[in-house]
Length: 159
Ligand code: FAD
Image 1 (cartoon, protein in one colour):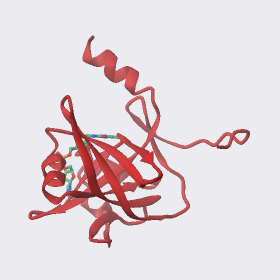
Image 2 (tube, rainbow, N blue to C red):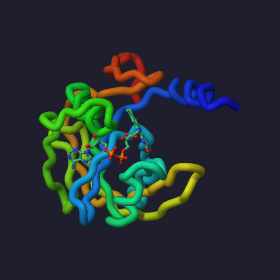
Image 3 (cartoon, rainbow, N blue to C red):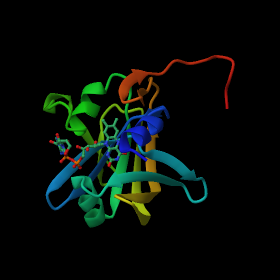
């Protein structure tokens, strides 16, 4: 199967957008990621998928911990910065939360220790055990078919 067809099909799954952060000997590092999901309630686990070629991969392997900042729709510049799409250091504002940097004013900040990791093709799946989290009310930044967007609520369904 052609890579483009695979990517296009996966892009039809609408997601939120996060910035993963960790801290190593070289300091704080951030990377935009949408491969994030909740895994387990007991214990509380989440999963991220990080490309082997990403600098973030060796930094998480070194630190054994990471944080996930779920971005709001007013944080497009932050996402583009940490994806290397647009340099905008003015948009970057970290705060410290339980020994890890997180992106200030995010929808949610989730601080994890690496619980397990699994090589999967050209990515590593990291399962994180949640140590602490904080949330605030605002609307999410979304990603669909390779484009950023905003959430539109449909009122008749709730889970
Ligand atoms: P670098 O390319 O080294 O850094 C990324 C950018 O962040 C650079 O501009 C760097 O200057 C800046 N930066 C890093 N740390 C700091 C700091 N402390 N202060 C200020 N600036 C800093 N890739 C995946 O592996 N998994 C995913 O799930 C994933 N999802 C994505 C979702 C979206 C919507 C997008 C747009 C991209 C996604 N990517 C994903 C791709 C990934 O974000 C990029 O390939 C990224 O550039 C790789 O990060 P890196 O660790 O190599 O960091």
